[in-house]
Length: 135
Figure 1: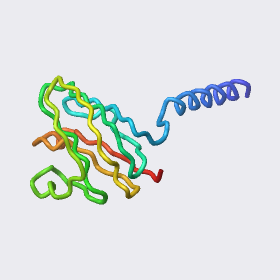
Figure 2 (figure 1 turned 90 degrees about the horizontal axis):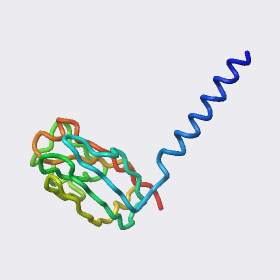
Figure 3 (figure 1 turned 60 degrees about the horizontal axis):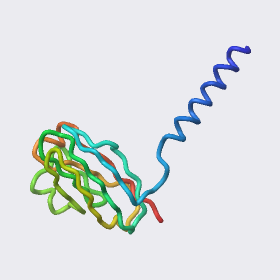
């Protein structure tokens, strides 16, 4: 009985520590690393309608794009010409480069798909999610 109590207590402490290290709520300052072939971190929470500063680093060996799709759109199995009309915001970064960009977060709260628009990169797993919340 005492052993079970200690295990439960240790588990609760670990959960509290992990939750303290997690998402700290919406932010207007994002730092994203792109590699071959992922975004790190892969989830961003931003306040609706606010100016967002994006510090983007491409640690990969090829050019990557950071493409935010419009609310309610999903590129399906690959990013192609038909998806370009559904792009909310995008930028491109050469390998080994870092740059800071600004954009205005969408005004509509919800989950927005973020992809790399370079051919084959989405299929390789280069996908993220931007969650827009009411300010």
